Amino acid sequence: MAELDELRAENALLRRQIDDLQQSLADKPVVGRAALFSLIDAMPMLVGVIEPSGAAGFLSRAFERWLIAGADETLPLLERLVPALRAPVAPLLAPALAGQAQGVSLTLADRDGESRDLSLSVIPRLDADGTVNGVILVGQDNTDRRRADEALSGSERRLRLATHAAGLGIWDWNLVTGDIQYSEHAKAICGFPPGRPVTIEQIRALTHRDDHPITSAMAERATDPAIREQLPFEYRLRLPNGAIRWVLAHGEAVFATEGDSVKAVRYVGTLQDITGRKAVEEALAESEARLRLIVEGEGVGAFDTDMATGEAVWSASTFEMMGLRPTPDGRAGPSIWESRLHPADVQHVLAARAAAQAGGDWKTTYRILRGDTGETRWITTYGRIIPRPGMAPRSVGMIVDVTDEKLAEARQRLLLNELNHRVKNTLAAVQSIARSTLRGQVGSEAATNLFTSRLMALSSAHDVLTRETWEGAGLREIVAGAVRAYEDDGGGRFQIEGEDVRIAPKAAVALAMALHELATNAAKYGALTVETGRVILRWEARGVGEARRLELEWREVGGPAVTPPGRGGFGSRLLRQGLKSELGASAQMRFEPTGLICVIQAPLVSEQALEPV
Image 1 (spheres, helix red, strand yellow):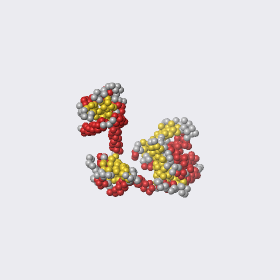
Image 2 (cartoon, rainbow, N blue to C red):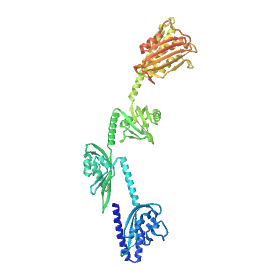
Image 3 (tube, rainbow, N blue to C red):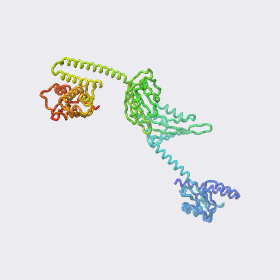
């Protein structure tokens, strides 16, 4: 209804203007009328005059360009109109000829088929005495305005979607009137009730008092024509319920020129709730502070390296370990780490890092040369390669100075080697005493050789444990040492099966002696006395926890038939009693016609526990 009233008012105005034009034209010569029509023709106005006969009296260029479809000028103007305009105009002509003006708004296809929005008035043309002598069609093309409105509507819709997706509220502060407009989402962020206006006083009261200086300063800088600050700023809100909320504001002032001066007239921007992000940032800062205290307090260095550029960020403790002065921002240039590596360790360190390039952990121990003193120090690096899609990976981790541990290991190894040397000297002295004691006795040579071989088995087990710093030994190495003297050149006398596992020092010595006795007996009486004989030695760890046990089987095949001995000798007592007393183990021997079978079962708990190598 409002649009119709507006249209009627426009028609009335047009009628008055046309009456004025007609009166002016009546008082002017023909040249004046021609000039007026030329002016109308030059303007983008839709003007068409229908004579009482129905013929076209005048057509503006725009009217003819868009709304005339028929080229035959002898036809009535109504029939020459584009089809979409004929139907709505036809019923309006009779009322106009009767003196009644009417209007219509419609969307139609013009002569070229392009959609156009028109506001068209159909008004009577009057003579000087008020007699109707024709009809005037006056129209306005609203197409550009419609498109502009649609573009604006679409832009506003996209803005709403964008601000909603980003969680942004919008504010608009009129600096002239002091009024401020908050979007509904901005009100929700601030805890204001929806649908109600807000004032600048309410907003100032909501701002945390400690943050008033920053919000005031940013507003002053943004509205200063010489500065026009647009940087974002963060501040806190104290909501009506007492909760603290962090917000991020972006603002920009709108300036106007008044005479010779320029001043801000509006201050508009966005508001975003960043309370969650600030909580994460604070937690991360606390975590980093704790980590920094732990790392630097325990003498541990940290690093973060871009694998493409070699640029790194080091902790202060890392610089100190390398004997370098820390940089203000903690950055270490490319190759600074490699330059400190000991020349003999460069290749294996870089190879260890490269092996984890695709993403994984790496650990290596190496030497460095301190940058200040040139001193050699031992370092262990614990690193992780972190892949980044579309970017070079990062190498992050920490370094620990293990020089003291390395020196302690060297001293321990020296002491163990010295102890092993002394043990061997003692065994040699025992061997010499035994030879001297048994010399000249009946059967002394065989007894001496047997005694000597047992000492050598014990010595071999000590050698293995010394190499392992008496922390345990691999079962395969113990087995290999025990049977090495009885293996032929082809290496086919023993078939050894079992997973290589580590065993405790006490178990290593006891098993070495037991296997030596079995091998010696096989060489004297069993399978190893003939070329076709061989020994199958296999073992397996079974069970879990306290019930875990090692089961080892010695099986001789291909040798002479064996029978149980008439009495047990030292070897059988060593197998049965020695294993039981040392390990709590059992040894069961069966003298099968095909050869000796010995099964050793030992518990794998405490210091006897087995672990995969």
